[in-house]
Image 1 (cartoon, rainbow, N blue to C red):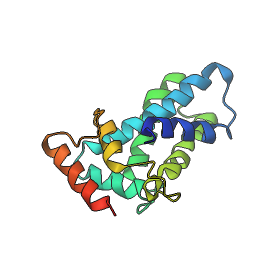
Image 2: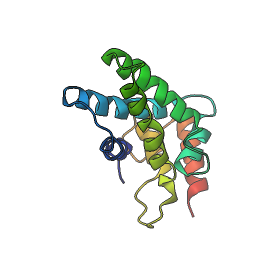
Image 3: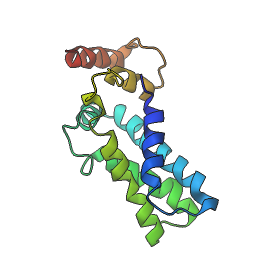
Image 4: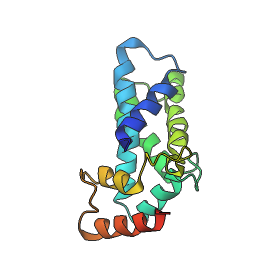
Length: 155
């Protein structure tokens, strides 16, 4: 299974390749984009209704551009990265912030498994977002929700 953090990092690198980023801040920006997106996914996974929001985003049933997950990632990036770099209100900051919806759009639909290789699994993504490392559903409410969702998504 492809790790969600690897998928995010790959998509960030692809999207950022289309924007000129000064060499002295490039690593901070790329890491900040990845961390902000992953942070948004993690926060969403633990919020009420968050699993449904993630499922909608990752299956492509909801628009990445209007997703609250995308909005949160943008806020995290602006506050935690652009603000610290002094780019919050600059045109360069705006260009970098525009990468968030692009990357989220690439993540949208990753569970559709268009090539049929079974590479991405919602249970594994949820476990990763919750800090789990095994393929077992876990315990408590999240474990139950993960098991139920996993059962619903199986063909």
